[in-house]
Image (cartoon, rainbow, N blue to C red; front, side):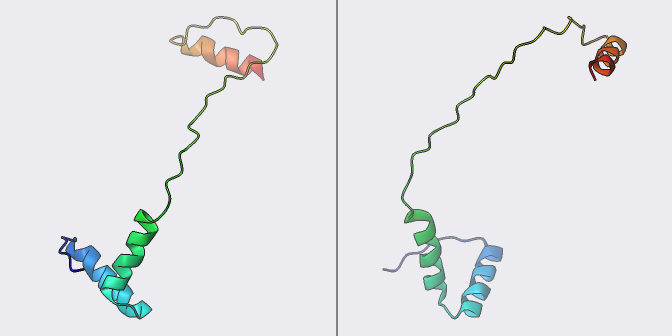
Length: 79
């Protein structure tokens, strides 16, 4: 089947060079690329599941995050 498509000129030059280096025609190279993209079966993802992990211990003292000096002191004493 003959089809006309528009391809970026730089990409087309790279594709022509790759086809020549691999001993394929440009059509064969494009077909291979399409098979890799279109022919791959779609696998539904499991999705992302966020889990909060908690540990036992004491709660840190309330610190005003805008108070940089107190924040630094608390971080230093935490070590």
